[in-house]
Amino acid sequence: WDYDEAYEACLEHAKGPTPQSGRAGIEAYRDYGYVTVEAASEPASRTLEFTWNDHALALWADALGHTEDASMLHAQAQGWRNIWDPQERFMRGRHEDGSFDEMEGGPNAWNDDYTEGNAWHYVWGVPWDVQGLIDVQHDGNKQAFLSRISDFWDDVREEEDDLFPDDFYWHGNEPVMHYAALGSLAGDQAISAEAARWVLRNRYNDTPLGLDGNDDAGTRSAWFLWNSIGLFPIAGTTEYAVTSPLFDRVEIDRPEGTWVLRSGGAGQGLAYVSGISTGMGPATRPVLSHEQLMSGEVVLQMTGVRAEAMR
Image (cartoon, rainbow, N blue to C red; front, side):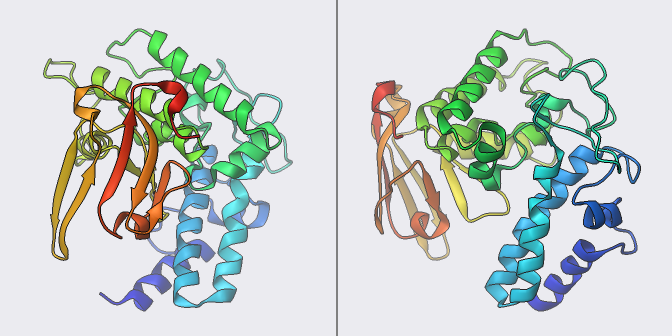
């Protein structure tokens, strides 16, 4: 397909109103650096979506050599920082005058700032810039960021599962689906291993309540398949977070040949990854680029000891 024509079409949506566009509030987004409460409904969710889109589009512009576009898009993609409320410590809807919207009912309540969710469902909605989240939310203190994620998953495990959307991690909707990958994205694979294994065990079964919501064109099925392999692709980037494989060996037939991932001991319950080797050499963190992934056989060295997990 025509990359240049597709790029230009996407760029138009990032620059201003277009017919039949999903970017309601785009004028305010460009003027204020965020979708304002006055400009469109669900402004916090829109801002997070728009910045994620713009980051991906900026990478596309880089690849095509459109340096001026790329500079504009990279800057625009930082708008998510403008809706971080340091007092409440959540992503919030924000007015034109700079004040934050009222958080009626607290962070567990659904309100007009978000699309089908609450403040917890959107607090880490920037998986393509986890270092930015660490800088903004914890003044660069990575351990504080990891501690908040660990505490979050403790709350997830303690919450009773019922027919209603869960307060902290609701696997029935897309905004939280990268949350199990956050540990690895921030450099601690053990957190991701435990979170991914918990979701695999507790949010998939063959009872009438076996899925949190419908499969949304295969979204939950895809999540299960990726995490059972031990990887999670970060949309809009070329990176895959390492979570926790269920199998000792995975083979995927591709036109270029069979891709192989080995993780001996995973099938016997070993959940943590202590090292990674690729065709390009060892990985230094629990995240793989697409280039590393496709460079040859990938080997995850498995261990049953949390302290030995990659950090």
